[in-house]
Length: 84
Image (cartoon, rainbow, N blue to C red; front, top):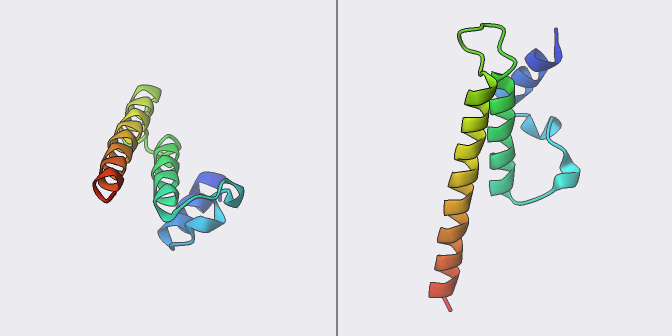
């Protein structure tokens, strides 16, 4: 069994905390973002060439995450300004 298969089994079983670096810390939302990034990385390690992400697709997916995160931060800051 290789590392990618082990990580996939851990995530599938809901034990993702075992593969994430706890020293990074963060909130529950940040853990979700780290899991999304982990899944992109796992897609780069797929055995099937048809399912495996190429580097361009991986970069595009990471950029999508950054855009979603940026929009989410904007919404959160607007919400906090409204509550003042």
